[in-house]
Length: 312
Image (cartoon, rainbow, N blue to C red; front, top):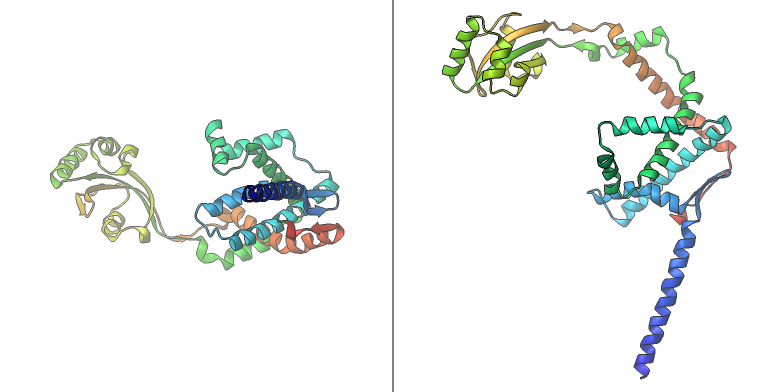
């Protein structure tokens, strides 16, 4: 009898402890993790936003308590930065309209069906609504950066010219060739197709009908190829062939080929005009990276910021 009473007492104590833990956990979920002036991020929101990150660890990355803790702290710093910029968005009276959000979702969704798109979030244990909220916040952050920094960044013709000269090797084009081929498993079949070509039959049509190469459906078109990136067994016969000419039967480890050269591009430097947009984008990106740190530090100094690392 005493033993039974003792068991019941232990059971009641456990119930009380569990009940207190649940209440404590519920209370903790409402605790602020980050506060930037009047903007507050609670532990519940933090956990909801962090869930896809946690799932990525479960998919194969280190999943120890210490690794998860480090990931949560890194994510905390990202969210702090985001909240500072969202606070700045309030000051600038910037918003993201429903139409802007809808367009951004559509751009990301692409050709996915609605069901397939939503299944991605189910796998990551995150709701579509939470993902859209994160996207909306990111769009707002981008607006702030664009208005405060990007719109103020420019590049001069001199800067573009100097960047082009400094990275000259990158703009140098290797010798290229565009060709098509017919690949056959035996020399007899290749000779038969070659005779048909000599009689005037269309190369692309014969490639579609006879070739066993992956490019057969494209009329044998192999696209543009760089000399140094081709196997030697293909490089020699292709680059020795004049433009517009059809080769004889060429044996390689892949089978028996017949080639036709469509275009040739000699090695040389591309014009600066061909790379203008890319160079300008790189210069702006570098200037943005230089300006971003001091600008963010200035924002941090003007807001009242509280970060509660212990809660996470």
